[in-house]
Length: 317
Image (tube, rainbow, N blue to C red; front, side, top):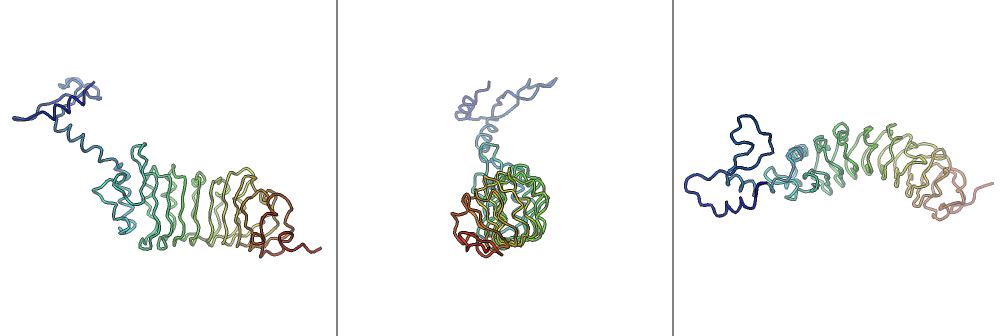
């Protein structure tokens, strides 16, 4: 085995007179017939010193760096991303909002950009080139507009969490089928409209938040007795469906369906929810006296069509 330490010592004491000596480094390449180096690569001390000092500075994967610089361009080169420079390292030089996995070949795994009104552009399609991306987080970007680049993001098989919150995003069809593998989808406080695609029925997300949009139609496919979802927040939309016909998982801790046009009665299983809000809907019937339902105050239930019983006024007989 070739001794790097000995070679570096040779470099330290070597004083060239004409041309630097040649060192033979054992090669991992197969020996070819008539190969005069006999399976050794010819490397000079100058090459070794250059390699030893320059390699650690090139951590950012070139494919990811190219994609990030293209993303910056598609964002119209905002000053917010001035740290994204071609002559710097995207993983080691504090590129704003860029997080790398230092144990997995320095690939970009997270993009987090928040709190900026200067950034004015659609979500860049080149995000789909970050093949190791796990988390995409955009929040408080009021001039982030246009649709979500569905085709581009659907290529990201490692993507687990999407948060696009409090932006100018508007679209009427925004979820591709592959999104059902995500752990979390937060698209609150945008301008999304239209019905949910049927592919939502296959979703089993840990965290699903679609609040404060203009979504409409049926959202019953979000529920299921065997789903492992921890948070369902579809408040402040225009959803309309029979809540009494859905199956609520006994393991669902947080449910907010307030400020919609949801009708029917409170369904079985809802008594296990720990954080509940069904106010400002068209619900009817008596509030069941079981589970956690009697622990909530009036604000959980008020402003419904004919919901009654404690903590609301008694039902009329």
